Amino acid sequence: MNSVLVVRNFNLELFGNFKLQNINFSVKYGEVFGIIGESGSGKTLISQSMLQLLDKRFIKYMSGSIFFENKNLLNLSDVELNCIRGNNISYIPQEPLSALNPLHTIKKQISEIIKIHNKTIAYKKILQKSIELLELVGLDGSFLNRYPHQLSGGQRQRVLIAIAIANRPKIIIADEPTTALDANLQIQILDLLVNLSVRFNIAIILITHNIKIISKYAHNIAVFKDGEIVESGDSGILSLPKSEYLYNLLSSSNINRVVRKTQNKNILVVNSLYSKYILTRKILRKNIYQDILFDINLTLKQGEILGVIGESGSGKSTLCLSLMNLIDFDGDILFNNMNYKDIGNFKQFRKNIQIIFQDPYSSLNPRHKVIDIITEGVKIHYKNKINILQTAKEFLELVGLDGSFLNRYPHQLSGGQRQRVAIARALILRPQVLILDEPTSALDKVTQKQILELLLDLQNRFNLSYILVTHDLDIIKCICDYLIILKDGKVIDRGNVSILNNSKNEYTRVLVESVL
Image 1 (cartoon, rainbow, N blue to C red):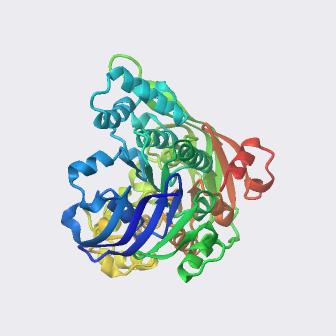
Image 2: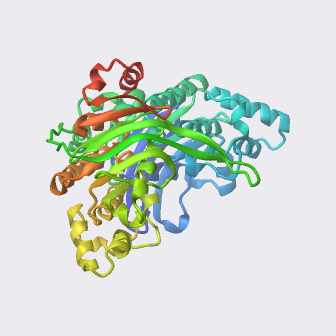
Image 3: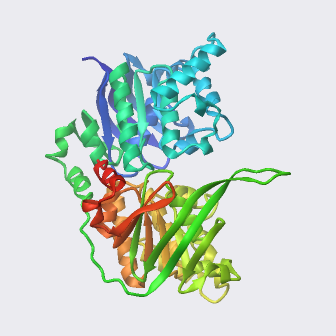
């Protein structure tokens, strides 16, 4: 079988000293080729190099070749490359919400990629093809007039796949296509990609840090570390790793179960919580609402880790926002027996309960230095009562960073370092409860393990209580004491972690069985 893509002796150096060195691999027609490695290993950089998407001002040096059907992509003009991008080679970026234009309907965004490469095609033909593409990815024509914010994470990812296959490409580069999706949706999206690959003989370059995904779907694999391929071969290399690096990547998926004693004291109690969003705002009439949460009841004990799991759209993030009093809700939330409704100055109270978001990059202000980011809350709540610089250094050291990071900006940090800064920002206010909304889903397994071990260490040190929202059942089994399972805004199952193995609830069993 001939190769559709061949990378030979490719070298790239950016200003800032990061390098890709001596990269060699080939991808066959219809093959699923896996690229794995920890954050900052060069996975995304090589994918952007294939399509020449990098700003040339940042490139210090480049050599070698990247052949697509015997054409060296490095020697092509921008006009020639534009005929290949989105036509012969498609790219599915990691975050579907930021990849789709929030101001345009799905119809316009699918139509655009068809029209660019088929300039004489009639409007009716574009509309018909758009509907066919949506049906291929498991959606229907009713989605054409929707905007990205009106879709779930899985639906947005399907739209990106529809755009990617619109012109029947020879290669699809899928950069972390399932990072923010629950286990059910992960399998649906990956199965969809593989089925389309078989049906249309499309090569898939699958970039991920999820070893289980690679072992199940990839035919051949390249393992990246610090801009180099340290090991490559078929999926069998995952069973018998030759390099120490790959061995460490595989072993990082195993986290020892942590058993702790929780106290009987209830720190957070939720009774009959209902929550809804404004679906449509009306000027002269009542707004139209959509109910999200229905009759939620839960209890968090002092020193406990409560897990919250459920598929995309089940209401997990809405629950987090309600607990932070960031959206309106009906019902009662009691913190140390104090009802939220009785708290006059909630801004001052909020230092007791903090949240760490899923994506550390978007949750940190890109214009602020680390010292300003982590001390902003201190300045609000404690004013001049503490030494800002000394406190900032102290909490950076708590999360494994040193004082040299204080004057850096978020873009100068790795994913793991940014998440550590986010943790320091939350801890510096000395909260009693931390809400962790998918705190490790955007991180590779090595960094995930480091962050989880850090969170457990900090919990023991400060007697913290955690509410952990995640779709990773391995993490739930490892660190959680108790869990609730959400579906369609309702708690449909609850208990200690053992319910994942012997639940009588059919939905819980499906969730567990869907894990790769």
